Amino acid sequence: MQFAEMVQERTQKYLQTVSKSERKEIGQFFTPASIADYMSKLAAFKGDYVRVLDPGAGSGILSAALIDNLIGRDVKRIEIDLYENNQSIIPLLESNLQYISEQLQSCGTIFDYHIIDKNFIEENQREWMGWLPSERYDIVVSNPPYKKIGKTAMEASIMSDIVYGQPNLYFLFMAMGAKLLKKNGEFIYIVPRSFSSGLYFSAFRKWFLSEMRIANLHLFVSRGSVGGKHDNVLQETIILKANKTDAQISNIIISESVDEFCAKAINSYKVNYHTCVSNDDNAFLFFPTNEEDAMILGFVNSWNANLPSLGFKMKTGQLVDFRERDWLKKTPGNDTVPLLWAYNFNGQKIRFPVDVPGKPQYLKDEPSTKRLQMNKGNYILLKRFTSKEEKRRLQCVLLFEDDFSEYRSISTENHLNFITKETGKMLPEEMYGLYVVLNSSYLDRYFRILNGSTQVNATEINAIPFPSINAVKKMGMQAMNHSDLGEFLCDSIIEEQFISRQI
Image 1 (tube, rainbow, N blue to C red):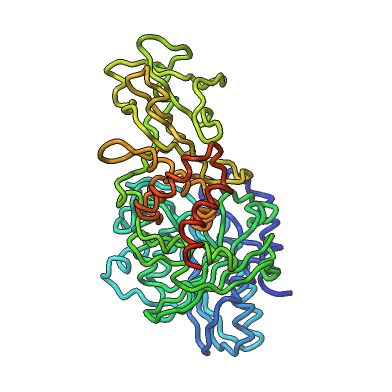
Image 2 (image 1 turned 60 degrees about the vertical axis):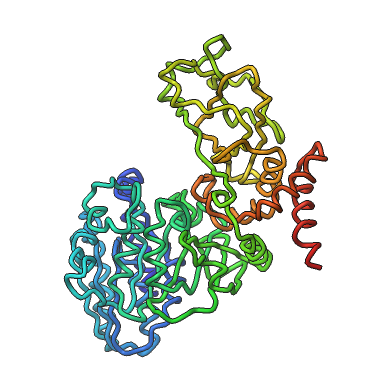
């Protein structure tokens, strides 16, 4: 029996004694042996003495799998530092490592392990600050805790230079692990994909991508398959292998599997490095899984503008319904203005009012609610949230000022985004042109490759490429001649504007 399988069997017994709610409280999710084995095989280390770091070690399955693969490479000495401060699992971790040590000793491999029963971030504060040398390990392998913490939490304070908004422990573990690697060291983590885009992770991405070069990305088709039968991991999860080097890497190998058996990849594809890793200030990370995805990225990235550079900006609806219940009205009156929800979307336009239980269609108009109102005008509205099963992630409608001519203003609920013109009034051809781009399969697929979640953030839409204002207006004037602006028509207009003219 391999060490990883032994650890998994022992871990199954441990899991019968601890509830999911207890483990969720500390952000603890266990790695199946099949995933641990796949991760360990990503390590390309060659040498006779290796130093390994395993932060958030749990029962030690990642270290066990790595040892399984290292002992077949003529490694004579293995030294592992394992951080784990969950008291309930440390006895199991100690027992597993002691068993491995005895087995390795009998076959002549020197094995030194150190269980460090301390907070991983706090214990390495001086290394992060540069007060002590930090490059100590050849390999860092981890399934870090997935847990949000406050901005004033000790871990966030220590690593404040890469924190924006509410941090999550998993990306702090990623950064600290990378910091402790030797030059040319190998970094192998299983983490949520959420760090790849969005404002909250931007400082971390810029730091990480300046220190590390990504070599492999593995994606899971099903979210529920990652944690095995004892964990239902709702985050969209990836396995990431990176190297600590300044050398340029030409390509990233991307693979997918249906379930936890990563070795049975349904797809494996080599992608140009900067097709996946943007080299602008956003430092976005994309996940194309085939040639068509790569083509979409190349095509959209050829556009050299974005919404702010065109004079537009996406913003988020101002009204959070549960905070403003006293101001919401079911019926109109002389003292109300329209309140728009995602439920008001109807094809390419707004239907108002609609009768949806619990979704009042009006906001009381008085001085206390001016902060929740916006001027009448021409806007494009987008849903902030869609379900995983829906065909499109980007769902938008046109909102014309004349649709609400009898009102002084309108309001939008917080589950909506809206695009507005920063100066002046949005022209009809601008509205229609932007709608063509947003409602095309090209931008929808581009967004899906970028963002694995079902949330559409204003930060991302404001950052992604758009055509020039002249191209937007030309496409808008063409779209205005049609009554049905479905995805097929929007694609056709874009292809006529950009692709057919290149042939």
